[in-house]
Length: 240
Length: 395
Image 1 (tube, rainbow over the protein chains, first blue to last red):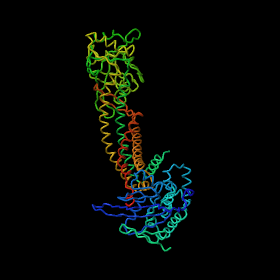
Image 2 (tube, rainbow over the protein chains, first blue to last red):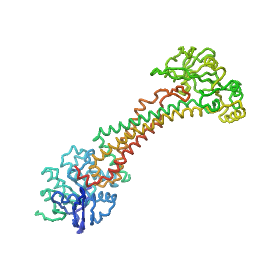
Image 3 (cartoon, rainbow over the protein chains, first blue to last red):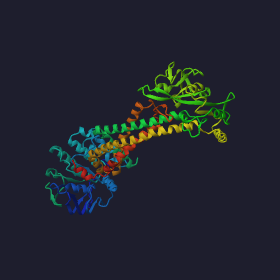
């Protein structure tokens, strides 16, 4: 896997482009507008933290970028592919090729061991069993869990489970990592380790990372912080 | 291996590995389906056993002649002159120069079941030595054959097994006369094993039938000779009789009762299957509900909705197949080969064994899979349509 992970991109064209994106939910007969004409550009190789109050649309934004939710209007282009009109099956293939998800609660398959969990995205490729095994080993090495390959999620700590989830997200070498509160369920020390791992993936392997978080400490690991408020972004530069 | 197939196998494997997370619900589904399959197989084995017993004794080369329009031997009467005319009919095989013709009298006598002492009707057949020669696979297993004019009986093994009082050497009373059991015979489990046999003249005399008989059995030179025989009968107005092959006769006799068993069995099995279907539906819906986050995760990773559909359906099919296998094992243990008797179309008992063949077991497995397929279909659609984003927001 390591050989396949792309080097830091210096391409100037944005990896992610949102144009006039609108999203409305209907709840109890009332329309709730999350975004109205939202615009955003994120360059390849960026590490962006998205913050904002509850209900500001952080997770909705992540879902739209990951192609697991659809915008009502506007255009979402990622890696030069327009998501808005993609069929469900095309979106599934696109997700498999382009995006790695990291969730707050890890979402590992409890009945599979760490290696089998990491292998899941590779089952969507034409790689042979030995190639898959090699890539899984590399991904687990990157997150420092090569000696836990045979352990089930129950036998791992929260931090280790999140590392397995990160290995699963990067094993098929996607350009984009979408992280939804990746440290929300972890203690401060473990959270720092996870965030350092994400930083390393961004720095050393050129992964573009969008991370939703409530935690200002976590946001400090990103290159940029975007604050979502009432459906609009307010960008804040980080001091260091 | 194609990627989609790999996806389906992976999702199926994950689903199957998650079954231990729902042990009681899964076991309940397996046992419910097992019960349905056991009941269905019991009925099928009963019907099959009854049919095999009746048709197993029938030959294409032996014909049965009865009075015109008589559906069964009990309704038929043939007089001595008719028997004499049949003796000289064409197409009849001969042995030592004599035609192989067996005039037979079929009367009903009382008996008692061994299991519950219930009174039943048993068939007593009067015939000569030609009658025994006409029946294939008949062998004496104990004692000797009856002797003419001595009120002696030989008893079929099936009849001996199911009804009391017919052990070798016993004296049995029918009406005003006593009969001695001098032999036990087997007839390869066919319907003849449900009969008592004695000599024709003795039965005619003790049951006041004069010189009449109820049927005449004849061996043909070859199966096609039945046409010559029919032509002969049609040309002689004294012969107001019907002629059928023994095989066709027994097939028709089997039809009614076998169909009744199936007509009871299938609706009962289907009614029970509806209950099992509800159980399977509940189990698989619960599975999808408890695994919605796992399914959503797989979908987010890039697994297709098709793989989620087939993965869920596989779980349902596997549970039902396990239920089908368990049901088949239970049916084999508790029903295969058990002996029972029922009223045949001649108002006498026919003893038969439940016969659970490989074909019937396959029917049971298919029935279980149909329950699993129908039970898994709608939950599988639900799994395929899980809104990924909202599945993550529910915790």
